[in-house]
Image (cartoon, rainbow, N blue to C red; front, side, top):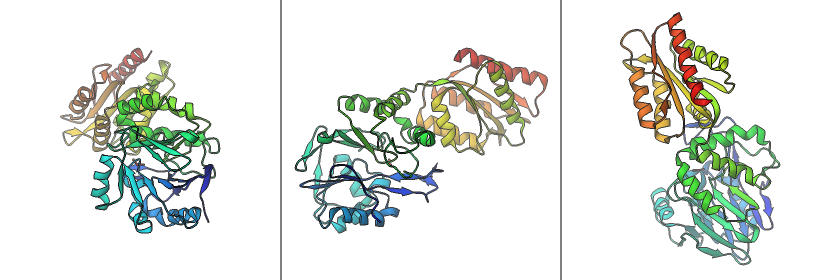
Length: 395
Ligand code: FEO
């Protein structure tokens, strides 16, 4: 069965749904799967824009051949070299040996390193244009969104932007492929999680890209993942603008690690105190159960963050260490922080939290407390004090 869909005259979506892969980039959970979107423009010349992950290559190439009815692919435009989009290049070259590969200088270095030497390369730069006949394609560099070679391709005739990973989302395309055909409420977390997990480190490059692309007339944005945007273009652009400026809402994420429940007891006490102070958006996560992907996504959304961990072998608990490393690596900005610990003897979590706060440059709302085992009445008062100090910063 051919799954290709004509999205504009002679322009087709030929993406695939992946419901088998559990974790994206071998790290990020995919509870709702993911789609790899590729597009083909059939003009006097045929241009393919990005490919799909190699595990889905057979169906993809069959669909492509059926659309082309014996014609060959003249150009492969590579907006992004990550293998979920470049995975079919090797086989495309076998199938269409005269294919010209279009990318920028950084693309070609990666192409060589991933798939070996290539001939028929056409290098484009910022503002370069390529004629396909009735249509032309213009290229804009969007470095570090989210790799150094990333670029986007704009087709002025149809006001269509092929945006690579930008404006992408986790989640398969179930039924429809356009934003007005799919259930955006169902996909909401997968859209924001894709941004926060994959693009989130690159807020400054995202702002630069938004400014650069702001002058284009856009009727359709075709990303490499998630729905094609045509009815909610301003909505997704506004979301990107907000996220990449690290704008947050009033609310608090409490993430804790706990071996025997005492640190969790403190987390719950702080949560209750926050609620008593009028905070409604409170998200409490156990780092041993919830993947950092979801905790980071909530942290991108809410301004307040409170972290708690028991001492573990003289340091911090391993799953909390993973979360801290992720946040440090991403350099998430614009948050206020509270933290607390639990110990049976020498402690260990508090110095790590202090180092984290200094590295990530979040304002610390109050002095931390480190409880010995189960909470006593005085410990409860200290938990309430953390909540009160947090609320004062949020209100
Ligand atoms: Fe969807 Fe960065 O690859």
